Length: 360
Ligand code: COI
Image (cartoon, rainbow, N blue to C red; front, side, top):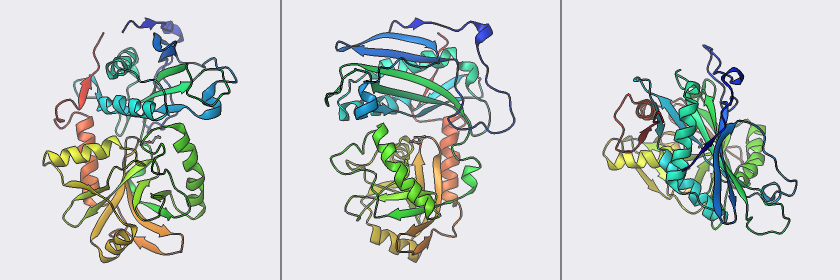
């Protein structure tokens, strides 16, 4: 890829703030971003430019009809001082899945990979070397064509921005959250955009999130539209742990977004490293097993938080179910420690999971 570089003068470049406190999640920005336009059926003018506003017409179709997709991934500094992307190929692949789902143009995965590697290479001083921190990578694509007809746009921008980040939940892992099992709100339906990382899915979740907060819960456990099966938790995949330590994740159907940590858990299981499987999980069975103690832990798998343990579930009828003793369990802790060990290069990751950022 022939990338054009427009690098800020050193004297104008900001630096990663020096602090002992955990960095906030999603607030900080680096000096540059990667941008590319889609026009006349082709991706053109790939460039690394100073981080700053886009020029957008008021009729840009993303603002009206929501053709916007994004990804979230992380890069880490290892002990050898080099930066490594973690499973970014999965994100490139999923971005194209979302693109197809929303009638947007795909981008060759090798292009997406190179864009991130080259951007991180010039922003390497921004990769935090602190506990529970990473350089969060946010690629996204949106429709820019100025038109009010409802149809797939013919023009788009693809951008990659970076955000040095601390833990998603400040103090996060120490607290197991309370989930509201909602029969009123649904995240997605079969045949819709549930398998995609598109803005509309997140906009639609805000009302449900507020509803959960109003009822003293941290997040929503979504059911399928028929209110029979478990689907997702907030922005994450749900899991529970059985007595023998097996992680059970709802089957990836056509309304569930595949998170990278849950795909990884299943791959680690196929390598015999942990025990994990997928199945359709009926709400009724789930509640019975919570009550009988057959389910000992539960939580969410997502890139931002990695793991978010669940301590209890509330239902809209006022009933309440505690998971185990309501605290963070050992299998959840062990998974978190193992997975973050892979990300940080403390434990050898399976072939292809980490990619070193070259010094171009
Ligand atoms: C994730 O953890 O994968 C998410 O989707 C959260 C992100 C939207 C901040």
